[in-house]
Image 1 (tube, rainbow, N blue to C red):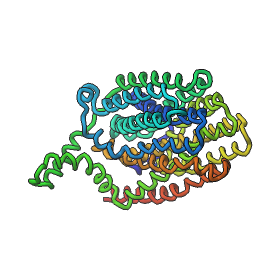
Image 2 (image 1 turned 180 degrees about the vertical axis):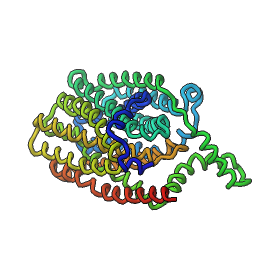
Image 3 (image 1 turned 90 degrees about the horizontal axis):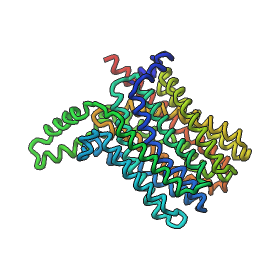
Image 4 (image 1 turned 90 degrees about the vertical axis):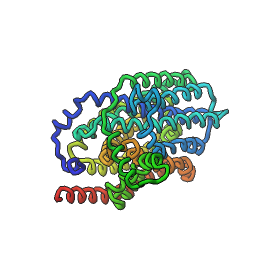
Length: 456
């Protein structure tokens, strides 16, 4: 499969024609639902905490709640195997979990609207953690939904990844623009009430979408039969079989299919690839404010311009990845990500110049969109079909682990550099080097594996 992507097998016309599929519209709406919570507990909350007078370090540590995105693989097996009562029969395995998590986020967002983080940071953090847990669980279901909806249609993998990314950035940037453009006028509590209304709209989209048809249950039954045979007449056999298939088999199958050495290299690459981008993203709002940009400028340049740019650049990036291959796309995207971080170092030296800000946003969004499409496509190719939610969650969680745990120290790093933002962004640019080195090794081994399979 991967060799076809590496071999530039499709023409530009075929790449563009691959977008003519109604399933991509459903994936777009699910992407919106996935990106939206990051506004609630990410940029919006950072802006509110800054306006409330909290320190850079406190804002950086508050972002530690995002660590749950790195841990959702621990409960992802439940989303593959547990069918929710009532909702499961009505909506299906994937949409039922998505709707349940969106309901939890709706109630938590309404509660945040009636808090003051400057006076009750702990309570606000608990509500934000509730949103993070629900969102991280929702992401498991949404990623599985996207992969299963496309199925074995290899020509739609990159377009599906692109529409998911476009949806994610739409759900993140457009509400973020609305929030920052109205925060000074109406205040953050009113903004969060508006955000709750948007969650309700996303819930309607979930109800209108189509549940994918898969062979997931048949594949899981086959795995259960293998464990039944191996356990023999063990006491409590049905429970052990269910536990083995649910908890162990998704991870065992991934390592069995790739081999231990390649599997470890893949997981290490996923962990390291986007750490530099995460350091930049965690401190971006704080940086914009310290440089001298207002909430309205952040809304206009970072959110609105960034959203429009991301949509266009994601489509371009997906076409390039379809045409030239995922591995090459990942490498080019990694180099471009590092270069884009240097644009922010330029802003730190030049000051709050709107034209430079727009240029940096355009470059950053192009490189982020390009690399993300390749990254998501790469993870999709590595995911088995029997345990879609669990295996994709394992891979995505490792990426989030690097971005959330290490990036939590981004505020401390800026303080250690005595507020030298230019040097901070140079350091984030250098963080991509280990990931690129691993990518070269992984790409070579994947190519060798495909050549061995085709020769036998």
